[in-house]
Image (cartoon, rainbow, N blue to C red):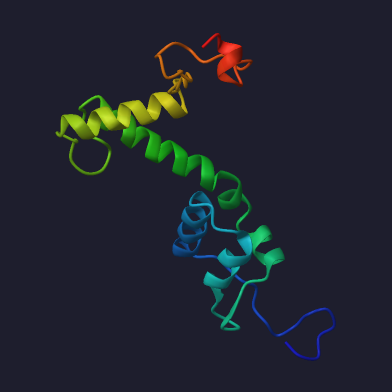
Length: 140
């Protein structure tokens, strides 16, 4: 629309459903927004979106992508651990895999942890005390 004040000839960017899904998944995977911009191509210009355009057109996807991905993976994991059919795919039947998933879940979300105790022992098998630097200090 050349010749009309305040109007450029370029049509505004309109995101497609595929654009929205791509941005949501990439955000959920933790890919930086600068790299997400490079994958969304404006069909009018044939160039990647700017960071500002990404923020304007994909505000909801950027805000919810990580949460939705965590919910999907968490839902799959819990269903698999419990031997139920997850929303997509088949249930995990391998007991070892289900146990590993349960332990992972409890360590990351349930507060479980592995503890390791290291105790120094002397040559005689008794606990070694810090102040025993020399054999004469130990009464040997």
